[in-house]
Length: 196
Image (tube, rainbow, N blue to C red; front, side, top):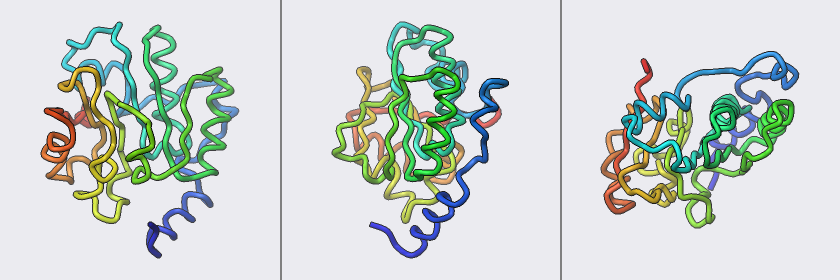
């Protein structure tokens, strides 16, 4: 379902994929940031208690041109960490750039999903242990109602106490813990601090 505001937003991200990146730069550097740095997830999200041998299944919602996706996938590869990274965004232009960047890095195990966060319920994707939704939730028609894919996103990992949402947008949504707990058994949402 798309209203005029949503249509304008979608057109903006097709015309100006965000953030602006040149895939050729991947040969020179890895963009590292927050949230979704592997050490940050291990320490701040899972309290340094999650075994490194347990697969981490991450969803990067609003993946854009791939910064968080590539960073996490590269770090998991370098550290021989099992799991998966799923990129999700509506923008075909951003997808093209993100895929080119991943190809330059030799990262071929990323799952690419071009669709809205709201289209995930019932899609068969997941479960996810970690969801990076930084810079996404405020774009939803009703963020308090629609986060976690209209409360239908599969965020129940093997251990129901090990689910996390990362991103500063969660600070603005008072219902994040209540909705997640209501959605899946006794899932606990933890916010990754911006200062980490």
